[in-house]
Length: 159
Length: 157
Image (cartoon, rainbow over all chains, first blue to last red; front, top):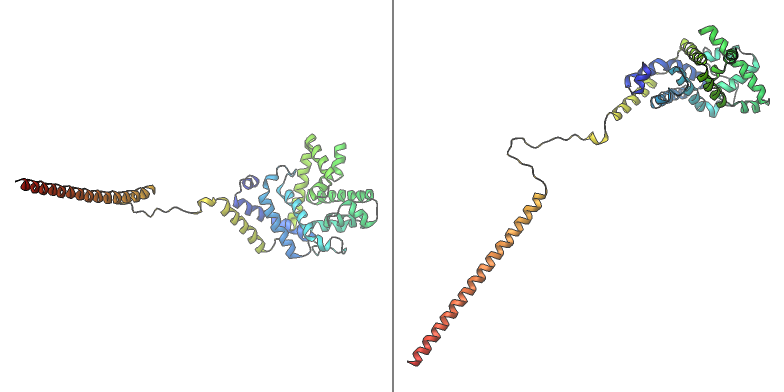
């Protein structure tokens, strides 16, 4: 098992982790960070983080290394993208074949807006509510609807 | 039935994407311990998302892989070498049996021994000369005495 080998710090396992997940994660990062150089930085950061914090995987509540890496990837990516893109522009990145963008483009307009600010920009419900001048409860409902659709979208295509 | 509703609400997807609030995550972790089927569903969702993400992988540039691997090698180099063992002890002493190794205190001992031997030698010479002088003095004293005695005897005669 890859995870066991990572736990004991096997360098070959680290290389394998990179080779297995870098592509899938990079695809996700490119949807979040529009600048290539910064997307690259995110990938480096995520893997270096993962090598150091592999011990936290078991208690993270994740079953797969991919999901564990994905959570951190999005966290790093949003931090990296924040200064320029958080509030400016409704434009998203060019990565239109990306999984989450494919999904995003299928949503109705109100859900699109909330999902974009929440997932792609990493804003909290409170901030989105303030930004759109809508009550928090309503934003919450819209986001829940969007995520429900995301569940259906995933199940339909990749079950 | 309620559990199904909970799952269908997309809470797991929300957790996996990192959109769930802290309270929601806590609630989910609590529920997972109570309902194993919920835990299984988390695994399904994660695998589904993984498959989806692998559908269109975009490999980062080769230099990124190099940077990550370099870091691994660097860390490896550090992990397996203890800083104190960075120096290898090389014994350059000839092993022909004609050399011995002694403690450095022997050096001090030999210096002291050398100085003391000089001191004693000096003292030996000094006292020898003193002894010779006193001997000579005594002999000349005796000689004077003998001469005086002879002189007085010749006077008497």
